[in-house]
Image 1 (tube, rainbow, N blue to C red):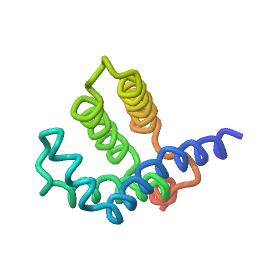
Image 2 (image 1 turned 180 degrees about the vertical axis):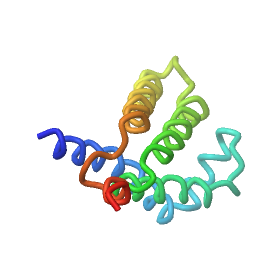
Image 3 (image 1 turned 30 degrees about the vertical axis):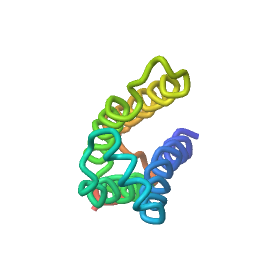
Image 4 (image 1 turned 30 degrees about the horizontal axis):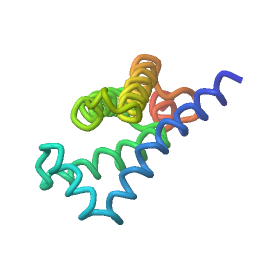
Length: 126
């Protein structure tokens, strides 16, 4: 059961970022405007898409999981601070706490790795 649980948990974490990154491609101008309204240069959007979509895909397949999970944890904490810092707004507070929780889950992945059903596991056996 442990191996399956690790796989499902990794898939759940990875899909958040993969889908978010891909959605930013379709809503490029709107996302760029939102970033700029928070004081983040819109020219960083391609990097954001790469981090989210690429990192999400890496988690889904379990490739370089420890490194990817730590990078995404830092990215998620930065997003919480930059975009969800209005604690007078209950929704922004909830989104801030959601990001903190996701970062915590990613930190567990960074410590424990991808699990048996992953590219990382296959690489270790060869």
